[in-house]
Image 1 (cartoon, rainbow, N blue to C red):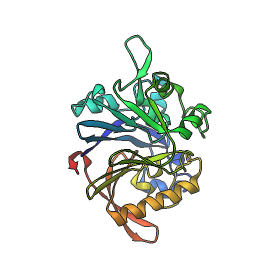
Image 2: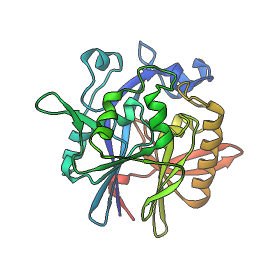
Image 3: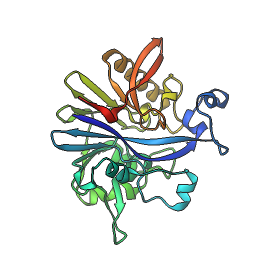
Length: 279
């Protein structure tokens, strides 16, 4: 099994929104904002190469954003199709896509515009997996931002019959498991990967960046911040105890690493480059 972190594109979000109740004098020390109070995020996606199959976790924001949106969010860099191509992986090579949730910065790259301007699945040979509850919440726009759930990112998947809705924690393939965390969205899920003694977890928006290691450092975008905090601290403790590699979905500097407990609810993060890691 080979694990690679690939970018779905960089963008910027309001720093206050990224740190919720934490005052700016505290968070700006560890994450300085630009002149518009924005901080840089990456959309780190996880490519799993296993038994001749290519499995992608999350897809970034994709190529369908308007020029206006690109300016608002300061979007830059290669999106998921370009990043995969740089690794020698074509869209046709992807067999399975697991989505942590359906916000635009995670599911936007799941679809694309074809030559005729129609929105189609970006990975024509892939089946897509998301929680049934997340799908239903997306359809009902159950979120804190009314532009976070965008039907063009997920409705074509259902229309084309390539979307699988799962309910609860389960093994998707041998060694690849999804677990519902809640918190960020009601049915947000993380993805755990195990091969022998090697273990990795894609934490999604439960732990987006190294700057969010402390318990109260959570996003204002979270529907249920307390649940996020509980799920995050549980994840950090398990990862520290069992030597898990954590993939951070939004950190622009450190995309993956191991954590260690330095005291009650205090953790350190040691980078591990997954682009050279295999299990």
